[in-house]
Length: 255
Image (tube, rainbow, N blue to C red; front, side, top):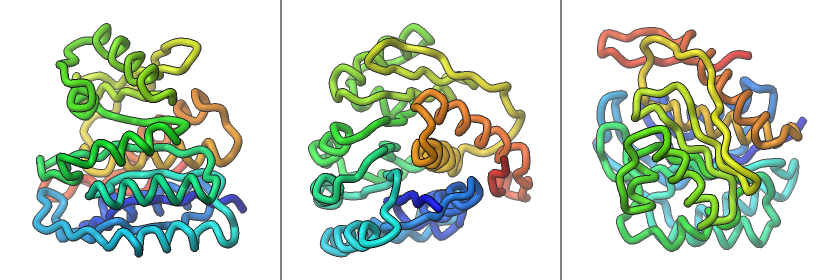
C-alpha cells in the first residue's frame, strides 16, 4: 500500500484539516500519515482558537513519516507561521519528498487568519518544491496583489503563478460561482470541469480536493488526470454529505 503525508492543522469540528485529509486519503485506498502544524478549537461555523505547534515538533513528525512506508506524495494545508512553513520546506527538501501538493490556506471560510501575514517567504519556498498548488480566487488575489473577476482573469492569474513559481497551478473557480477550475502547466492552460453539485458547504472542500489530488499523484496518475479524479471525488463527497441544522455539511468521499 502507498502512503500520503498530510501536513495541516487539526480541525476540532472534524470537517476540514487533518480529519478531512485522513478521510479522503484512506477513502481512496491509500495509507494516510499526518504531521500536525496546529491545534484549533472550532465549530463548523467559526474558528475560536488557533495554537501553532513548535516548529521542531513539526519537523520531527515529517522526518518520522519518512522512516518507513515512505510517502509517495505530500499534501500541505494550514501552516500557521513563517517558522513552520520554513521548517516544512527545509525538511521536505532533506527527505527528498515527491509529488507535493500545496493548498495555500491563508484564512478560514469564516475569515479567521490561518497563516501569519509575514509568512510568505516560507510559503513561497514550499511552492518552489511543489508539483501543484491549489489556490482559490481570494488566495490568488492576495498572492498576486490584484483582483481576479472573470474566466479570462483566472487564466492570466494561473499562468502568472505558474511562471513565478515553476509548478503547476490549479486555480479554483468556486468563489466566482464556477464549477470549473483552471489548470496552468508549463505547456499551457486548460479547464477542468465536472457537473455542479447543488448545496454543500465550503468548509473542508479545499482539504478534500488537495488530498485527493495528492492521492492520485501517489497512485502514479499524471497531474491533469489526478485533478480530474479529485474533482469527481469532491463532487461525490458533496452529494453524500448530510445537511445539519446549522446548514453545514459533513461526509466522507467515496469513489
